[in-house]
Length: 234
Image (tube, rainbow, N blue to C red):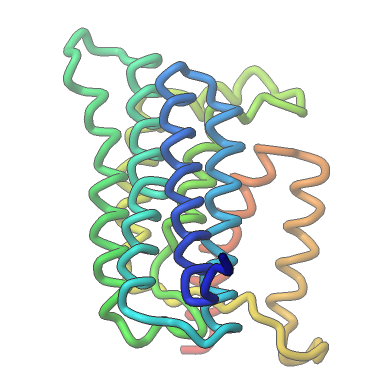
């Protein structure tokens, strides 16, 4: 029996959700690298469900709702759970409830996903950090040491207060009125897409040489360059 084209994008969206659920299991076992891997798979499927929906011209309200619900797990619950685990590992208080503050990331992601569905300004570019980008940043934190030798002073990245700062900051940046430049390059005009091309070159170099640390820096660079670009236009 042939599968209708209309079901293909939704099936891909459900694969995103499935990967998010598997990631949660690994994070519960503190296997952050495997959790990161399955979140990466989920984000991959999240990209292609929209691609095939547009290609087959089968976009609809069901797909929109499924996409947000799947993202809520993969890019909402998972990063919140990772931060909970990290705050618990690095806690400086004896209060067992403090690490639950990590789920503020989940609340911020939920608000952004709901708002994104009704915000007509974000068709070609984003306002506020997209939940997948925020998720990659959060999940890279427990993996910074992999593939690169970090100096001893870099332990600040897993300091309790720094992690708590990242928690509140990520929830804010996801929902802030910060226009982020689009990464869509429609032609090879360096003059028109200089910012995007420079960013992509720097991003590739950071990922090649710094691995997970490079990934965290790429997300930070994206936000900083967008803010600088916005200020220069004003």
